[in-house]
Length: 449
Image 1: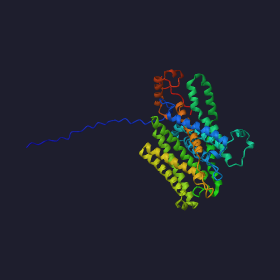
Image 2: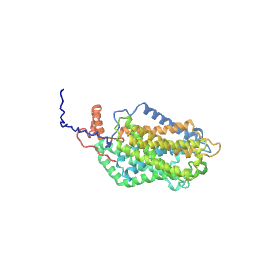
Image 3: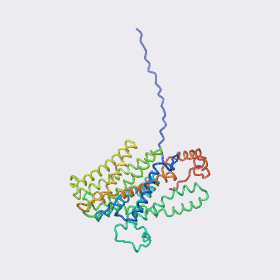
């Protein structure tokens, strides 16, 4: 019988060095390239926008009665209650993201600022133009130049003045950097003028930024304060002295959802890389904004003794619980996405919470407004088409601008890829120098924002 000898020979274990996977970093804004500006969807949007303009002219000719569902009980239709009250909340990204980036020092959010500024400008511009359609008599617009004739006793005066000034000055000026950048690269003869404009902007920027924080805070809260005047005509679940604060808070988390959600959707559509550190930061802030808002909302309902009305078998209770479900579940999904790192979960969280915020902002003016026992309002077909047309106008403007100017955030490599694309596909524009940077060895172009 043979025996086997087992020797304890030393075993050498090789350590395998793994290279960490590089994370995507949004380093600069890059235009959307390689896709057509005009496509069937864009043409549909333009068609709806043109139709709304034609119908708006018709409204000026025949008046509000034949074109809207408004009546003596419901003097506000969806042009005010949806296109202004709701859409300007979604369009408050410049305000909310700007405070996070500049005031609280969340530097990662700076990469979202151009998107926030553009969506805010488009939402406010479309809302203000439609507000003009609702008010009518555009030939009297020149009276705005004579402040001594303003009706300062009107509760709408502060809202109208703040919104108009905010859109025309801070938002318009803050959207100039992408235009200046394009002009600077496209024609060297324009560079001295562009640089002078840039210096002037930097000189006045502290005042512009101050106005960009003050004005939206005033009019977003004032939109809620307007409904305090309605008294008992607003259902107790919504009528509260905290309406200004709750309207402002809803604008905060809704606008984060609009900006971050729009960026994610654009990255999906145009195959752009996502910077998850930036998106996680935005989701974390949005989640805490929702948590704080829900705490104030529920405490207010309980303390005022309005909670029992939430259990009545009527549509008001249904609207209340639907609103709370959408906002709370959306916030929970945002926190969950921070653990799972799933972009789908994050996007659904933004969508649901923004939809719930929309329902909350819309309810005191329409769904929970009770002017009389038999009062009812439903928008007419023309009213709906005009509202839809102005929304389409804003979306079409967005799709056009992101393809012409550097708005969407991307890695620096995306700029170099764009340069290679245009050198191969459209060599006739090489004289512009716009796409030379990062391809022919030159330094990267400067970002003005």
